[in-house]
Image (tube, rainbow, N blue to C red):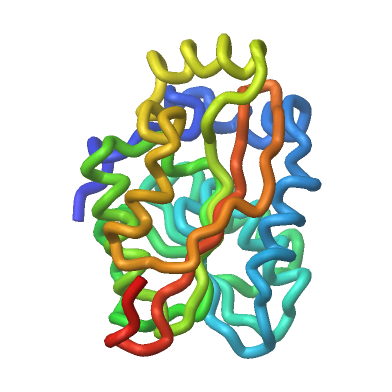
Amino acid sequence: MDTTKSYIPALGLRWLTPLYDPLIHRLMREDVLRERLVLEADILPGMRVLDLGCGTGTLAILVKRSHVLAQVFGLDADPQVLGIAHSKADRAGARITLDQGLAYQLPYPDGWFDRVLSSLVFHHLTTDQKQQALNEVFRVLQPGGKFTILDVGVPRGVYAGLVSQIIRRTEQAGDNIKGLIPMMMKQAGLLNIIELEHFTSLFGSLTLHQAEKPAQPSDES
């Protein structure tokens, strides 16, 4: 599958990709945000965990370090960032599986994962791609599995409101800013959708959400 024209590079331009890790580390509370995401995911030994849109592998490596008995997978469309992720995982001694693919066309069987995590990916996707990606998350989760996502959210405060206007023009973040992600999760079949925490960052408001796949096919919201 040719993904080269189907995604936006991490910083919008491929030549900026090597700068992604140092910029995010300097400009955001990366460690705090991702550690909270991993904590809320409630990962148990032996679980299969997918970092959806893994980028340079920071979150996937954190999951493996925190849960050494988990089977950790990372997926991203960009071969350049996957190369960086491979190098980082090797240096960290983290045995994770890194796959190339699109968030809305996951190359995994139904019910393959116990947990799916996503950090700062969905605001890169179009509305249709977001919904397709959430449908795919539902498909690859086991019954009772959890999806935990940190991404651009509804702006809170004057500064976040101003930043959201810029992000809306430079990214596909309109659905996030309007607060539509929970509704789209529900449309995909996910239930028990909750907002766990809200963060203010240099890039505006970020929200941590979690949802579950029904434990039984007949469950309804």
